[in-house]
Amino acid sequence: MRIVVQIQFTNSYGPYIIRPTGSRSGSPKGFVPRPYDFWKDFDVQVSSGDQKLRPISSYGRPNFGCSEEGGCILTGATLQFDFSVEPFASGSATVDVLPPEGDPVTLDFDLDHLR
Image (cartoon, rainbow, N blue to C red; front, side, top):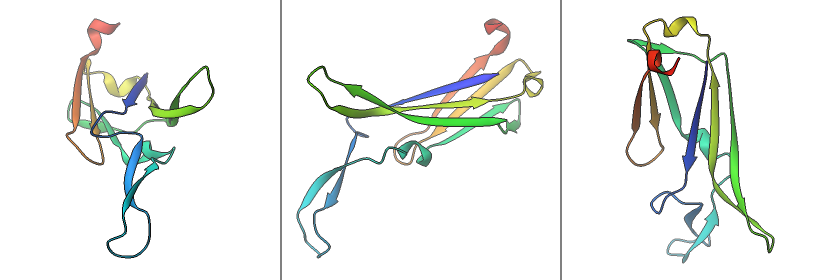
């Protein structure tokens, strides 16, 4: 079974981070691009029933939006988790996404309806 999580930037969690422009206290602040592997700071947990599951494999990649005039901007990330089917015998799955800042997101799935 494969679970894919899409992370999209929002106004409150965008592609840029506010950082001081210098090392001195009181330095003005500026914007720096968020790292391309920012998605590693998100904790994704999958469970079935009361059992937390470990994926067989997982993969993450940044997503970009590119303009016809040239240039690309980081827009989010795609995370992919592969699981053995056996642990999902209960017919349900819960995916919890815990971001490094902001509120967690929980999604419940009735797997019997998806088959």
